[in-house]
Amino acid sequence: MKHFPIFLDLEHQKTLVVGGGEAAAQKVRLMLKTAVAIVVISERVTPELAEFARIGRIAWVARKFQESDLDGSRLVFVAGQSGQLSEHISQLAQTRNIPVNVVDQAALCSFLMPAIVDRDPVTIAIGTEGTAPVLARRLKSTIEGLLPPRLGELARFAQELRPRVAREIPEGVARRSFWDAFFFGKIRDAFFSENTVNGSAGLSRAIDAEISGHGTDRGGSVALVGAGPGDPELLTLKAQRKLQEADVIVHDRLIGPAILDYARRDAERIDVGKAPGRLSPSQHDINRILIDQAVLGKTVVRLKGGDPYIFGRGAEEQAALEEHGITVEIVPGITSAAACAASVKLPLTTRGRNRSLTILTGTTQNGAADHDWQALAAPGQAFAIYMGVANACHLQQELLTAGIAPRTPVVIVENGTLPNERCVSTRIQHLKRTIRAERIKGPAIIYVGLSWPSAHQVSAPDTQSIGEIIPFPTSIQQTYATDGPLKEFAR
Image 1: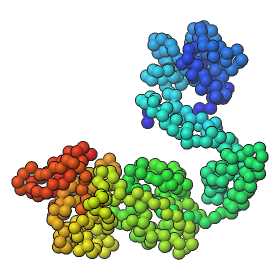
Image 2 (image 1 turned 180 degrees about the vertical axis):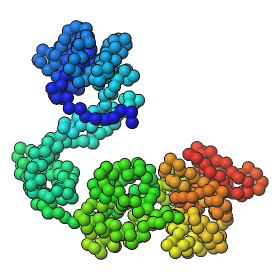
Image 3 (image 1 turned 120 degrees about the vertical axis):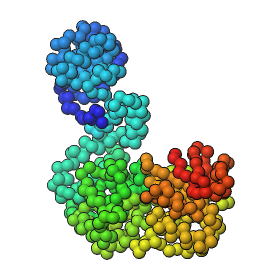
Image 4 (image 1 turned 60 degrees about the vertical axis):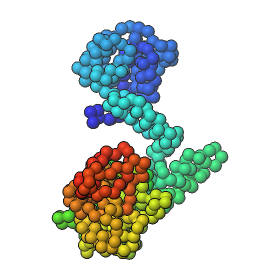
């Protein structure tokens, strides 16, 4: 981040604008939304600026720029001036440590103007370091559409209400819960629907109800939140909201910083991830942490990769919490089987070919998992294996023994949806060899019995190859090893 975003208090401070054309007028219009004292230096100005000067909203000095104009200035804008004069003013201002912005000349600027969403006093500034102003404007337009026009009024009303809330609601979880309801619940709804007939009474009732409901500290709660497979853009809106509400986030090892960036900055973060070869918290330890934090009255998020109820041990944590009378909420996440398949464009069901998908684990707490291998090996079956890399030899042997076709296609997606994602395709008869040759460590999903729909099919070019054709998307570049696994491709 080259430019640090800050909000300056410029009330009654001198802001100098050098220039009198439309570009200068744009800056003046923007600054007039604040309480600054604007001085325009230009021999000629637009009719709009002349009118602002006539009614006293700005001061206009009708002459060329002089160095003394910088005296007392807190901010300087240069608009529509020659390159030589712009550079001269920029140097003078920076020598005096006065922030200066030269329109359309980023190299001469010590600060940049963001795209601004104005819901005074709620203000959102969007910057792109000067690289993509069109993108900033589009983001502004999108955010404008999301924010109610009267959001600023609601913020001011909150300021008026703060003394009462401070008197009647204890500091901590209860008070923060009230403000959540104020800005996102019934009070907000009553405020935005307020009218001269019955709005005030309805708003007062909503406020009284929320204050009485939060007047005493309430017990904590735990939300079991699915973080999806790793790509932060696959977080659900509800998951994002829960991360913003959390006092404590208890997260797995594979929850990356990009996911945690969506959390409250002041939320406590506890890593309880399990990793091979290191001392890790047991499930009992994790349950105890969740219970202890909730008993303290905190809002706790248990952040899990994928979905809490799909090999996430969410049911065990839920049972332990409810046994202690702790409120539990489940926020589903996009499970890795669906997300990783979508990331490599691998359909999980295809009409006329496979009409079902089985999700199973390759590892249990006692070692390699056992399943109904005969059923899984039947023709037309498709299944996704979680945590199967370490026990791939066992999986391959059991399936082949049960009679699965040796050439059944297998797709392995490692680090799915992340920048270091890899996808390797092979046959069930080569599963163990492929994992070893490609040094697949995981986390990975192993898909058995699935292949890509494509009119373009590629087969191995040599006579010793496995001989069966597997379709791939035409956008994927594929290479093969002789008499071995189909090799890795990159998207």
